[in-house]
Image (cartoon, rainbow, N blue to C red; front, side):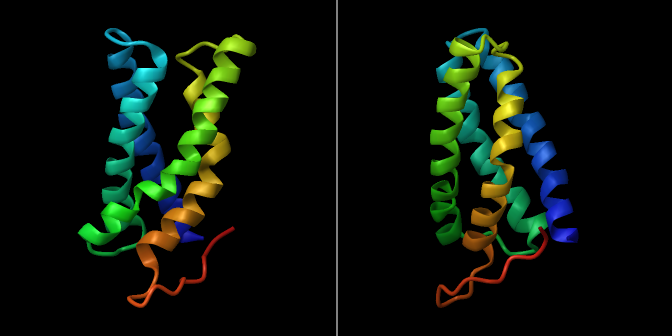
Length: 130
């Protein structure tokens, strides 16, 4: 449970940083481009925060290169949700990312843990928390 709480805390920090990037980019590009660029930046920030502070693992290039796979599912779901929220439900493009994050956190936690903590020979480490 502590691990999941750390995941939430550092995820919140990552969300704040990613959202700040997103808002800054909205002044120069469209919301899909801003979402994409801030998402990519957030993915790398997330790997560093999760590996070091959530799962207490050393940063490894091999895992960092695999980490984007974790976010491929989240990105696809998130971009569709952004479109539906902004274009169909008329939710503010400034608020829509918060709804996306709330709905994708459980998937991201499980996949992040798998990529960062799996054993040297590739086996999965049992997930802690909810």
